[in-house]
Image (tube, rainbow, N blue to C red; front, side, top):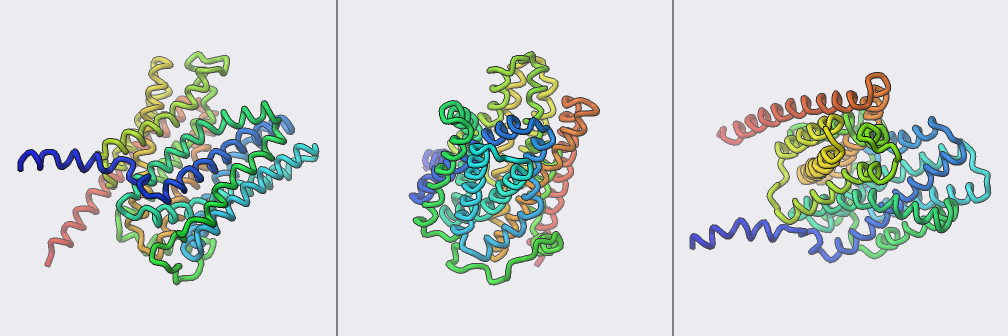
Length: 429
């Protein structure tokens, strides 16, 4: 009997490995969405090259980054409201249609030689809005397919697919440019979004597991509406903490360090922009993939607010140490570790938000989380990029990481105090 009990935890952990893939429909949805994300990254690679070739404008290149994240800050909550109200399959198809429109328009205008700055601005905005429409609907569909028990596994796998797309997108996009040319490559990229579009006609899931759509009307675009929903869920300290954690991570670090990677590579002696520079770019994504494999095969970390905060703190430490790494190998190692910690705390935060959000508000609460965890990445361009132009990108990343670490300490204290208050209310008769 004692042997059976001793073996039980191991059996439980083994059973949890890649559980989301045991759902037949998730096995269909997962590759289709991964291919779509690869198409998204292919478009980035080729369109950024087109912008450089056509205009040689650093300002337009900067706008390309802003236009990708600013719509998440402005419209994520409204997109979540739409996901609460309507069939999420149709919203995903709308997002894929917007992606296809962007690739098609890039390709045609560049092929005809008529691309102008205002065209590029408009297309970049369309592409950003497509991502905003997709995110809440995608998350509700995943919840509908796998349910509560396997949600964290599904979110981790989806996050790793995003990292895989970041790894494969530049390679595939570069190959398409080499073989087909940038214009035809962008036109061919339109076809990459078709599997996800067709899949939405096949899957029987609407994103609303109860078989009905939200009873409340679509909320307005204003931040006052977002604040109203936040007040409705603020009694759950796990949701509040995860929204704050995602926002702080995005504001202080986000992905802005990637745009500064050429200078970090220069500091490590990779002046030629060759393999060493590419390896630095890929290390973070590789860490995310390794983190997913590690977490899925061990099953040690369950979704808990305190665990997510600690992993975010470790991520900030790894990112803060990276610029001061004594060698290129140490820098690569720190980026891989950072990738592991990043996917751990972000997937855990997203899981907690979905699990504890009220059913009728789930899309809007996810919209709030996306507004914070994705939209505030616009601010990381200031904390690392603009600040780095004054004090250097090494110091700006180290300072930003230190500020994030202090925020995580504050969130740990808040989570502990909120947990104690909850325990007190439960104990009281």
